[in-house]
Amino acid sequence: MNAETKKMLSSYATKIRMGIIEGTYYAKAGHPGGSLSSADLFAYLYFNEMNVDPENPKAADRDRFVLSKGHCAPGLYSALALKGFFPFEDLKTLRHIDSYLQGHPNMNTVPGIDMSTGSLGQGISAAVGMAKGAKYIGNDQMNVYTLLGDGEIEEGQVWEAMMFANQYKLDNLCVIIDCNGLQIDGACNEVMSAEPIDEKLKAFGFEVMVINGNDFDELEKAFDAFHNCDKPFGIIMKTVKGKGVSYMENQVDWHGKAPNEEEYNIAMAELKAKLAEIEEA
Image (tube, one colour):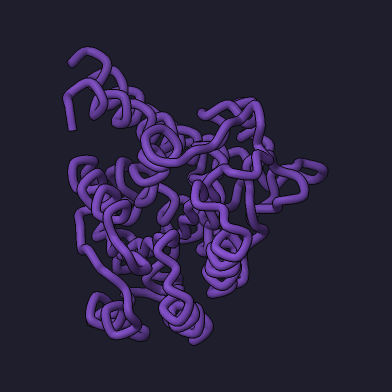
């Protein structure tokens, strides 16, 4: 990846992280940890990978994205706002009464959301249906991307969807798993280990890459491989939960709570400093 593109994506990822902090702080609730770990992916998808247009959010041949780990809506909302689907300032209304930005994605109220999600495991099931539908109607332009958490894949429904993807040879499907190692109750390997995740995906007929999901060069290699694959594709992203905010990194407590005023100020100061560093480089 050239330096200019990497700088652009780094800037967007930092702004997405700022939006995550803004949203959860003003909501006094939400899920910052897994949103922050996925911010680099959101930046890559919406500013370098997917065919989506905020001026025509329902275009028939657009790519689809399903946030299967729907609790990480603050990260997706932030990316959509930066892309121009709705005003960035609206992130401050997250989870408020009468706000269209609910705690989990709602396709009926939020421009750019392709599927309402929240109940873990169900998002990938919708994604494989979309991919199969595109095959059925002969839409060769559309790819379907779905993001899961490593805690989420403890759900049996996830593996039924994987089996479906293999059965129907859905080479237009990219399944991304955010492996930040933590879930609501603790470390994934202590609660219910899904390892070896790569071998499981391969056993279900997927082509698989394991990457550093907080590295744009590695994200680029993975998505290039997806576009040159003739079977369902899986990206296992090793990430840092709470990435970008020092006191949140690798801390399970930040799976599902909001920063207070002091914590908000510290986080925003760190992210603003990071953004300034990127822009000056």
